[in-house]
Structures are given as C-alpha cells and as structure tokens.
Length: 473
Ligand SMILES: Cc1cc2nc3c(=O)[nH]c(=O)nc-3n(C[C@H](O)[C@H](O)[C@H](O)COP(=O)(O)OP(=O)(O)OC[C@H]3O[C@@H](n4cnc5c(N)ncnc54)[C@H](O)[C@@H]3O)c2cc1C
Image 1: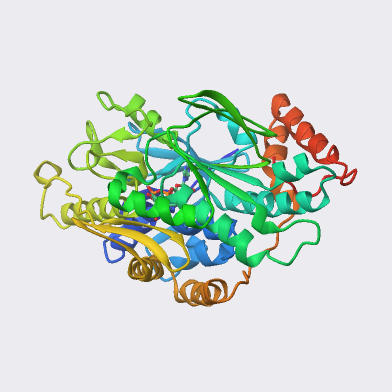
Image 2 (image 1 turned 90 degrees about the horizontal axis):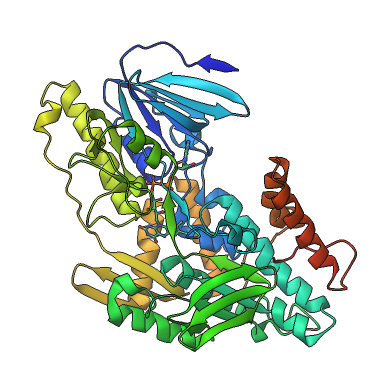
C-alpha cells in the first residue's frame, strides 16, 4: 500500500529524524518561507544523555522523551509524520517511509538527514540478545527490568553460585554512558535497594566496568579519566582495563586480556562500547557518486555538510563524519543550525550554494556524571571535577531538556533520588525483558525465536518458578 503526502506548495524541506539534529533543524526554520515535513520512526524527541537514568529508575520516559508533534505543535510550517525511511531517491527527490506495512512517498526540495547512530557490536550482533545497548527508550526499559529482575532472581536463587551470577552486573565500555550507568547501578544497590530484600544484601552486588582501552573516559584525558576511575572504585565498581569482550551469552561474558581468556559469570550485561551510523548513511553514499562512509558508516560530507553533487541534501548529527566533530548533541545541534541557515539564506536570495561558508564546529566541552554530586567536566583547556562539575552538568541537562513540564518533573525526580534514597520509577515487567526478542521472533527469525525459548528455559531453570520472573539474560 502506498500514499502520497499533500501536494507541493512552498519550498519543501524534509527532515528525517526527531533527535537533536532533526528537532533543531525544524526549530531554526520556524520563520522561514518553507513547508517542513519531519519524518521519524519514533514518535518522540529522545534526550539520549539521560537514558541511563530511565534504566536505573530515576526518571520516567515521559521526562526525557516528549512527543515530537506536541513539541512542534505551535510551529505551523511543520507536519510531523511517523515512518521508517527505507528509500531516498536523489534523482526524483522523494523519500519513502513505512509505517505498519504502508509506504508513504514525500517529495522534497531540500533534505536534512539526521538519523543518528545505533549500538555497534563490532560484527557480533548476536551479543545484543544478552547485552542490550543504550540507544532507545525500549533499551532503557529493558535494561531496568533486567537490572531489577536480576536482584529478584538473586533473592530466590537456591545456590550461592546462582546468587553470585544474578548479583554481578557487567557494563561493557567505559565511555560516558558506561561510566554513568556503572555508577548508577552501584548507587541503586547501595542506597535505594538496601533493606528491601530478606535473603540478599544488595550491597553485595558486583558492578564490573570492562574497557578494551587502557583508561576510563579516554577522550577526556588522563586527569579526568583518573578522577572518574578513582571515584567509581571508591563506590565499589570494579574496573577492568585493556580487557576485550570476546563473547557474551546468557550466563556471562568471556574476556581476553594480557593473561589470556577468562569468564565473568553475570546474568545482567549492558553494552555501551560502540556506535554504528544509521543504515541511511551507506544508502546515501551508494546513491551519490563519489560520496563515501567512514568505518562506522557515517557519511563523509562536504565542507557544507552536503553530499557530492547534491547541494540540497544535508547530513547532520551522528550520521555525518566531519573531522574534529564528536558524536555528541552539540555536533548535531550546530550541524542542523548550519543547514537551516543555508536554506534560509538561499531562499532569501542572499547566497548561492557555491558561496556557502564551510561548517565550523565550536567545541563547548564535554562532561559525564559519576554519581550524585560528582561529575567530570572539560571546557577547552579547563578541566574540573566534583560537586561544581556536577552542578554544571545538572544545569546544562536541564537547559537542553525540551519543555517546562519535562524540566520541572526532572527536578522533582532528582530531588527525590539525590537527596533521599528513593527512586520514583522502579516499575519493571517481564514483558520489557522479552519483548525485543519476541518481536524479532515474530519477524520470522527462527534463530531469535529459539533464543527467546532459551532465555525462558534459563529463567525456569533457576528453580524459582515455572514461569520466569522478570530476569536478566
Ligand atoms: C546513552 C547516551 C548518552 C549520551 N550522552 C551524551 C552526553 O552526555 N552529551 C552529549 O553531548 N551527547 C551525548 N550522547 C550523544 C547524543 O545523544 C547524540 O550525539 C545525539 O543524539 C545525536 O543527534 P542526532 O539527531 O544525530 O541523532 P539521534 O538523536 O540519535 O536521533 C536520530 C533520530 O532519527 C530517527 N531515525 C533513525 N533511523 C530512521 C529511519 N530509517 N527513518 C526515520 N527515522 C529514523 C530516530 O528515531 C531518531 O528520532 C549520548 C548518547 C547516548 C546513546
């Protein structure tokens, strides 16, 4: 089935993706004489930097993922449509997106592609069955159910060996996401869950952060990386550097380091080790002669963030590959702003595409929280850590959260979680753990279907119940 969105009126800009790149592109075209169609496969604008707080019970999904159409309600020149873009026709200037087996074809004059990146398992996609990543709301909810489910299973485990496995949490990758997640799992165990079980003491949980490189937060340099490592270790997080994960299964991970291969038995694993650009990157490269992608599938764009031979097609955010621009929110926001400015200037007759000044990235710094009241922060040559850095982290995240309601509710939830020991979002269901695998099985992948059964068998096999409790893989 196929339908066509309403006919052409003014200059039509199609924006693909409702993340930082897509949303900021639309906002910067607010007063332009254009009709915008924003197409995204998700209905929300997701604030990814706080996903780990959804996974660890501090925030709800509503706080970090407002509905895009509500965010843009007052911007009358935007139509938001939901759909998974699977075709970009650069010759006929159309986009084809799919929503529940129905194709929609949308024509464009200018195109801004901001479809971001997803988790990369470096060719070992089967690891995802047991170690979900942290890229989507589904990932965060699945992870919350796996973390809390692990404690539930530990409480009922008939042997110490099983109990230890359920009380061991492995986070793969010591970048900002891995560091933040490891810190929050440790705080969850040490503060929120204390006194809530009768057979186990949640403080006995082992949180292990595994990193293939020789440092925590390596891009932030040895000083801040060292501070983060010290602080995590003080909280009881075990850090294993120069350790490559070579296999992941239901019962744990296999690690290779200088001493050879070894196992860590752990029911709950999280993958935050790498990213792979959206599939639209390679598609664009294939369809525009001379355009290439880098190793992560990001489009190597021209100096004006367009692809070769198509000055009306911009690629921004995590999908673009520009030397010196990190895969961070600032890169996406600045790229989207730049693209919108070029479109506006050319529609106003102020410049031709050939006269565009190259995109320039302004590095506003980077930061990561380690625990409540503690963060590391780098702005230019300035490096600082501790409470002041945490306050800056707090302010900046509130600033970029979209909408007054989200900001207000986030402050309330942080107040509850950081000053007290409670967390407001501790719900978790069995469905959250199994839904991803069940959907893959529904899509007809027999291998995945058997993985679902294997997961369920493992849950029943711990003697807790015939029906598996919410559990970690
Ligand atoms: C866990 C985590 C923590 C992070 N922490 C920080 C941080 O502290 N500071 C920082 O600066 N950055 C952080 N980042 C990085 C930052 O979130 C990204 O750089 C930023 O979101 C990139 O924006 P984007 O618009 O390019 O892509 P995204 O925000 O990923 O948005 C991509 C959009 O495209 C849509 N989409 C994808 N494929 C299709 C398709 N085929 N059809 C239609 N729509 C599609 C998606 O649904 C989504 O709406 C973090 C990222 C993660 C995952």
